[in-house]
Length: 294
Image 1 (cartoon, rainbow, N blue to C red):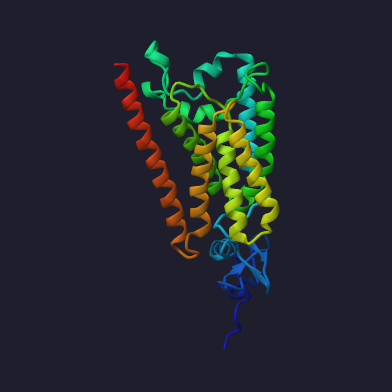
Image 2 (cartoon, rainbow, N blue to C red):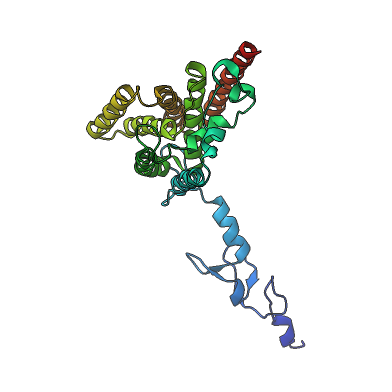
């Protein structure tokens, strides 16, 4: 019997055929070279098996279904957007008049506002604030709102995850603007307060759902509601209340949706239903206002 040729025993990496290899992937049993080896619990695995394993590992989730994140990036981004918008106001004061929340102008002298197709005001107004010498609060308007967003946003975003938190914030801002449109369409409003009231509602709902000590949470909500009442004569209570109600609805859906495969569907469904309701109310009110002007 002829001796086996040494060349026939040479094995090579399945990804690099020219590289000799004598180590097998512990998962797929293919030969891998040092460049393709990845440390595993036992032995080594190839690059493809490591990727496949990462896809099959279930991502850690919070109680409300959000991905766990250590950095509240959305909160930081929202603060940055508000500050940038404020700087734009300082450079060009006309930005406030052009983008604040306004349903229609009194007596219809000019075709401005949501009733005349400027729907973007429903959200852009939530990123604007009083100029330094404007209104009762001046620069304190943005300072107080950003401090509140900093304190509430980091807590709520950590629990909800980035996607759910973004939806909550925007729907709260939109809900505040829509209530302003319904009740005080001729009153220009601006500020992130409606969205922040929505975060406050979510903070309360989440605390109850998690079984937290409610003493501090109740004091916070009492202060928030007292501010809603006592500041009504200098602020847009309609925007605050609309944000509070919208944020509460979204937070309830997040907190009490079934904790199974239906959770994402229920949560998304409630958000879309709320969005649809706000759109319908906006269309109805805008049609009424435009008809009155005509």
